[in-house]
Length: 409
Image (cartoon, rainbow, N blue to C red; front, side, top):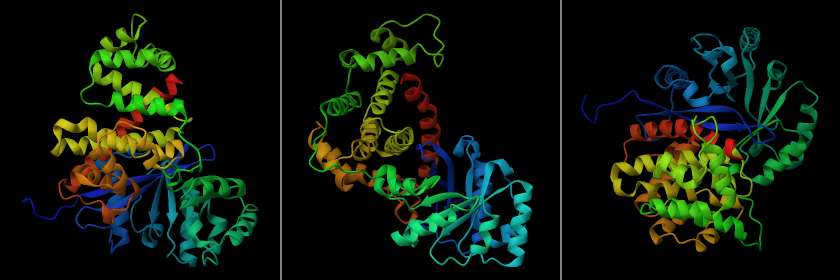
């Protein structure tokens, strides 16, 4: 196959679905064609089938959802049983698209699917929705916040709460919207609200948070030495205690208890000790929710992997760009205010604030992939297949790192 030959590669990304405590309850799997520069899918059946084939065969469903349910959009033909569903009922939530009419054959098909054990979700439910007939067959109703005025939404939710339905708010863009929907009684939430800060006007960054940020900058410095890392960690008593707790946990299975930071650093090596100290420090930023930490780690790891293709000597810097791109969400302050307080290079700050330069363009592509914004994913210096591979690597790596935060806190 020549370099310019068409490819059958299908990209799969995912978006978290959260419960009321901000735990990840499920993932929606998103389709992306590997040929076009956008998701212009002329045949929805092909999109759905390729997505499921990729998820099950090429990638492995478990590598995407880690035991949680997968939400997948279903076309009319899939609902009617014209194509095989390769997921077990306990692993899948079938989303009924907004263009599926509540015809008798569709209603009969949904009854059969529910009897088989599949959960049914009505997708993109809006004001005066023509699919009200399907509500009695649904387990989950995904309410599009952009499709309701605020007053109508309040009344609609009040009526819907009388039904045996779980309500999922989608397109939740801000923390304020999340809190409002939570007050109304929604069960699940989907959107980018965790990555959008709730800015508190007039406040500055707390001294303890600024200290953590400065520690992160130093830990991610590609020129940091073994002794400097040991000294940095030792200066932070809380970090030292948590790091030793983690290193002596069952995760590492050490035979002899490690009693000092120097011992831990020798045992783990410079790169690993920096990695663990970074994860524990992130967990200390204003009680950051674990899903936000996971998303940030995926982004940072993707930047690091993709940056290695063209900037091998600066992969640590690429990781730093991805890591600090979410700090506004962690701290509830504007990124520009946060960066003023930190000793980062002009190149890093411009990449973070305006997505300028090679690292900025890389960050922009990574964020676009993360959000399923396929029109903006393409990057002139990185093949699309490399972006998909980096994403899957980053997802697996970030999931494996979650134990650091949970064990050490």
